[in-house]
Length: 366
Image 1: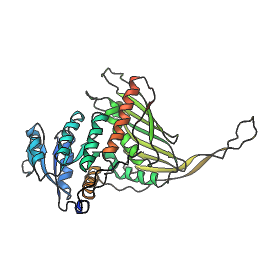
Image 2: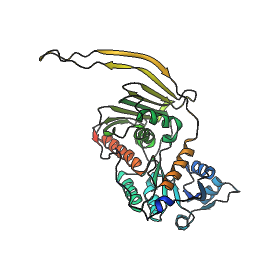
Image 3: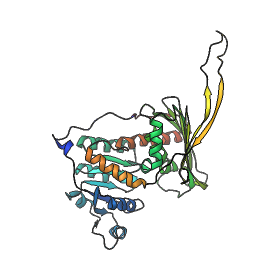
Image 4: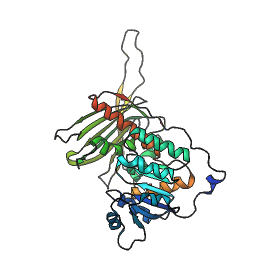
């Protein structure tokens, strides 16, 4: 599923040199998510926060506090002109991601972008191309991928502990804030789609999507939606997102030929449970030329194991990965192309909604 295109070769010796001290970073956007990035960049030894940029300077100053030495400004051009700024974290509305991130890349800065990577697939493609042409790090903050639980799921799936993946079922519902500019798919599904992209082995990839949505309250966009993804192996993945549920549910089930894993993000005492339970099918045998194959189905009932999962803030791990990608000149775990694959699914799902659940093929690959 991952594209194998490589960034142009760097100047001789630069790939081994890399920055040695803290990386100067600026956060753009002091709204909902920006303060979380500010807090984590300030506490990360790999970075030194230089600027918080927002159109509302007073809001930026309020986020930083009265005794902060970090600069607050509304002048983005001045931030990009500062040679001490080596990286920019973009926490502005998705519709501005292309303009803000593209300016940073053209100024020679490494870029971290909040989900989704851009408002459209084409915008995301432009960002990826610009970063690769300039040999810069472009990373998408798919925060859930950096939780200890999802990291453990990725390890187990890719190590074959669950066997061949047969299905993935994800539920993300709550009585949420109905957005004015995006539907529930674009608001909530990026989390589940980024997790799916993160945990699947490289040889397993979505190839088509069908989506159904409803707007029972007359909000003007879908408030409840279901996505069904066809995988190239014949397996299936399903995502349910909902702003109207009176209860909050955050669960993901990954079914394999050996074991099935259940992740409940709202259960800190047992986030992951692995069940050695399932259905086994004997090898089909031909009985006769005109007779049906005889398949023997058996049910396996084994133990349930709850692996110990450490606790660490996902954003802290994400910030550490951003620094490591910059220093080693390698793609981040959730690089621009990972963000592009999520955009591909979201756009295809939107087209499917327009055509009442029609199956729409995907264009990106790993």
